[in-house]
Length: 389
Image 1 (cartoon, rainbow, N blue to C red):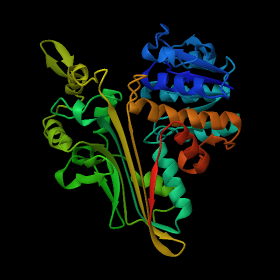
Image 2: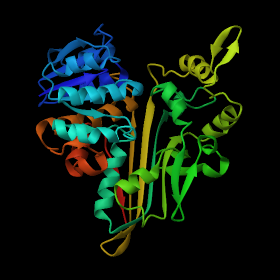
Image 3: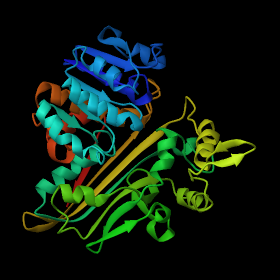
């Protein structure tokens, strides 16, 4: 099996390289990136270099991505910046190579028929969140007679000793995208009714809740994402009384973000600063990014909680599952790196092996087989704990 990793020298890309070179069924990994230094830092002694072929690639060129995919790839993983995602998907169709991505699928629906015609699979939303959570949600929809409550919580943040700034936050994901994620509308279901929140309302005090996370204690939950898109996909919207997708942070995050948003610090409208046009958003990215980095001895945490309540086999039932992982200081990879890249690697290999045979634009909640996927996660020490009553 030959797997191409688009953006293979990024943080998630390196985690994918490690996972793929450790996988027995993978013979070669095409590491495609503009960065060709090949310096993998601490990972050097953990990665089987004999499986890796470094391939120069301009990720902003569809033609160049097609060239890489046609070097014999059986499947590809897109870990390029999100703005390049459309090019990667279009290139995959042109090359006839199935593609897995960790980004949201909202802008890709028009590609279903072209992918179907090309006889290949496009599987976005195969990371952590979206990704692991959606595979679990799909299983819940299959097992319950009716789902009344479906709440999904996920976030990445520092361990307590690494909370050395007022935000109690450090960067384990693209900082620009972290800020953008706090400027998108959210859709919830409350008392059986759709509730739409604008980006301005996202951090309203009455919308913020604190939950008790197993092994961590109290964390803050912020509405983040369109719940209805997934309840509709799974055909369960009519029975759901309460649903939401939430980002997790240490308590106090919203009390700091709220006034910053209200004062326009996340605005993308450029302002003239002594003859230079700079948006407040750009300033926040450039000013805070170097101040929010992890030290080599500090760990990040990834926490996920999914809560389902409803009717199962004619009786009231609840299914709660949780995931808590921390940084591997030995390899230097952050928990966020391998919890995003791991699922993408698993699903890419499933497609290449023929475990997933569907074609077109696919969805993890519907098309990823639950039991094999969870077993593969556990093999990578990404363990989801379950509590059923």
